[in-house]
Image (cartoon, rainbow, N blue to C red; front, side, top):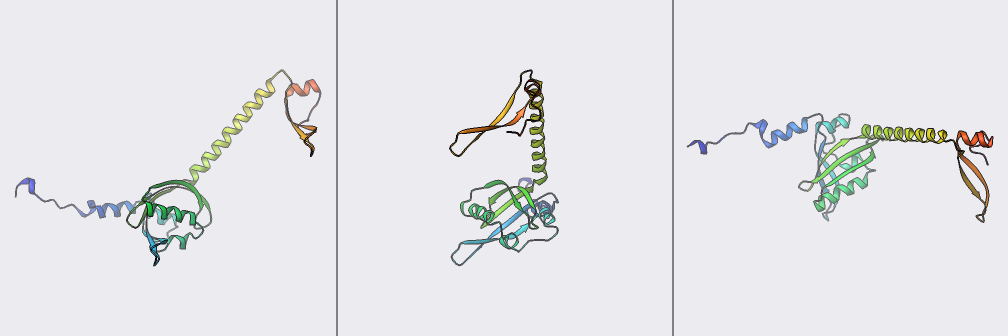
Amino acid sequence: MDATQEVHTIPEEYSADGLMKAAFAAPNNRTIVFKAVRNSHNHITDFTFSLVSRGTIDFFKGNDPTGKTFLEILPDQYDQFEMMRHVTETGITNNWVRHYPDMYGTERWFNASDVKSGDGIVRVWEDITELMIREKELHAQTEQQAEQKYLSLFNYLDEGFCVIEMMFDKQHNPVDYKYLLTNSAFEKITDLTGAVGKL
């Protein structure tokens, strides 16, 4: 046998099975293999947790869902089941970001990709709740800063300025108005202080 015909044995830890086991054991890997459950008419009625990563089990607070069904654990998430069924039947990958209550009823945001695999799907997912909360807080902070900047400019004007809301009767005739916003110059010119909210 020459060198070109030499057969190399791949160590078990580098085999496809060994690498998959190592990946699924990683604490930050959140992957689930779902297998379709079909009735006598070959219609998908549920999905079984066939293979679950260590990170997913940790999210379930150590309760391994392997062997249980999706709707058994999350019975209120039928729309998510429909997405899984669609991927299995069409082969079209589904990437999604949605918020759902977890198995303990806490609302959480998830980012996931569902890919067809055999008669089921492989789901790679992550919990992005903290990221969404920070993004929402940053958005609110940016809005508040923009409002403060607008009010500072508004009050800096030398001209009197106000924003009013017209009040109409049932026949849509104007009958009164309410001050929504006034600046400092307006109060000085009109001698109306504390007019905001008044008719």
